[in-house]
Length: 158
View 1: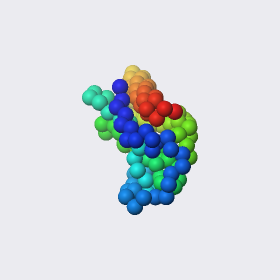
View 2 (view 1 turned 180 degrees about the horizontal axis):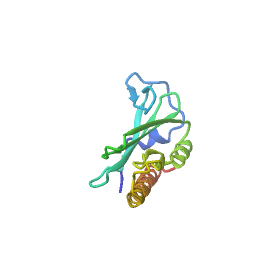
View 3 (view 1 turned 60 degrees about the horizontal axis):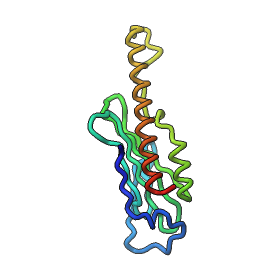
View 4 (view 1 turned 45 degrees about the vertical axis):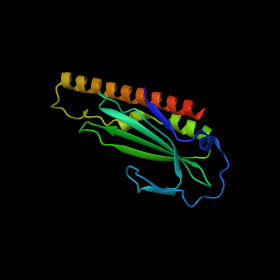
């Protein structure tokens, strides 16, 4: 089961925020294939599916801007050399939009295939085995992400 850390339920549910306080920190989130996403805001929720054993896992972090939308930070990590870590950031205007963003996210896009269907030298049995392993990784990524989203939305009471 994923661990969810909700920093302040009141801040998460609050739709109208007062003027930014001077102590609101600057955040810089990494994004795959893009420049870092920098903004002023505070983290309201953090969760990870990392545990012993799995070769891949997710982290989801939610931030609140003082005078603007929420920020959803989705991170994918893998121990496999054939896959690279991925980082994506989304803006959401409400908690319902956060739920929509997370429910629409497709974890299978994070899984890189390690089989080339054009490789004529690859024996058929190896091709079948590699595609089966790909399917297992996709199913695991979807399961972990779905469990994580369910825990986060439950904690946020969305």
